[in-house]
Image (tube, rainbow, N blue to C red; front, side, top):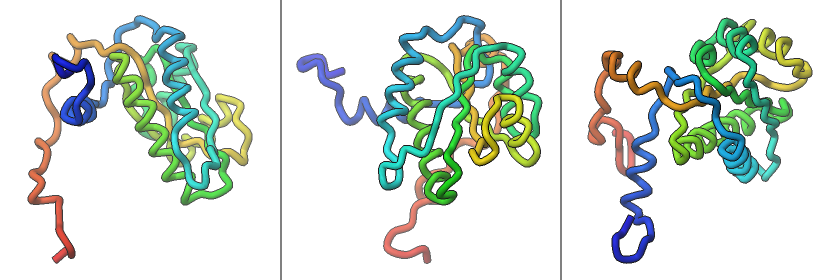
Length: 182
């Protein structure tokens, strides 16, 4: 915050965006309803192709359901330890646009959670996992279910005990091209 005006600078905002990280270990504290409401309002106001808003949002707090979702085929094992899961249910009418919209929606939910100090991680159901998740949650067949977001307060002790995986971020010179790829 700027000390004289109390307004956030562009640097503050960019710094906030850069600090979003995937959190897969959570404390057991529930995410307060007011925070969930804020996340849902951000989701409601997220942009979409032609402003179709082709999504519905399913909140999952039940431990057994979260564990079951974590065990289906895909990459959402982190749901098992989360106090809250959000499953994005897409209309299934315009595949290409909805895939893009789904990514935008997920990132905005995660950033809104981050603003509240709530950690998150995105996960996917793949193959038979999509059908299993749909059946487990009672979602109609015509809907597309592939994205789940785990949410909760980060377990910092678990994070500190984990060794860093993967390489550091690539330098801009390796990923940015100007005017043409060559």
